[in-house]
Length: 233
Image (cartoon, rainbow, N blue to C red; front, side, top):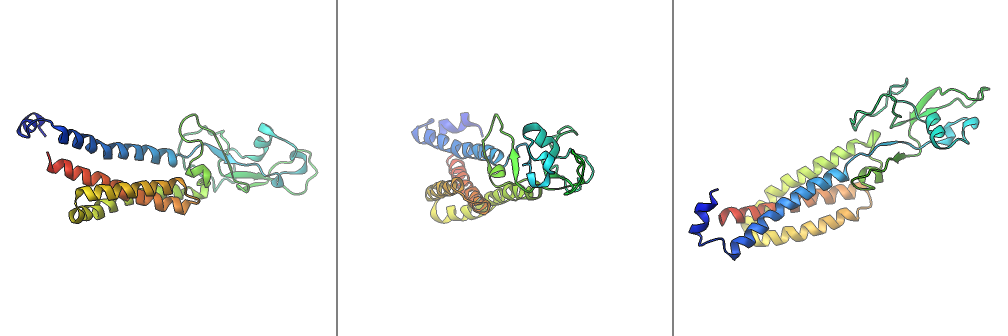
């Protein structure tokens, strides 16, 4: 679009066009913030199983700190790690602790420091590493969306993109019937409601539903302002 040719024909870059230009930037900013928030919300931090004293022999139950973790957590690539999940793909070193397994020890044995005889899935949840950047807690750490539940992260991301796609179809029809201004106001109100719902979600299903419909509302904002910009250019 050649603004040097268009602006003089419109009588200059007046007050209305300045407001329209500022408003046209709004959906792009919201889209950028939305993508970044989606990254932080579903970012999988480093994690490992919480040690379970019930799986340890009596001689090891009084350990703490690094020693307790060292005797409780297998190393990646250890034998019997058939259910080990490498969902993050962060390229951790081979000697890193397993993210999804705990050592299992024999219930009886005369050895003072018995050896593990297998591994089991995490029985007491996970311990997540604190990150310097991003959120201290996100949906992954809040609802333990790791290991066998890591597929729920992909479900949330796909449902959010589906919300945007549905929003383009539905809000486009609404704009044809109600007009661009009414569609913008409607989408703005819906977006505020949906994002409040996202922030107060008490479980994963509630979060997914509100986040998906927030994509519908943001698509309405983007579409109504884009049409207004295009028709007034």
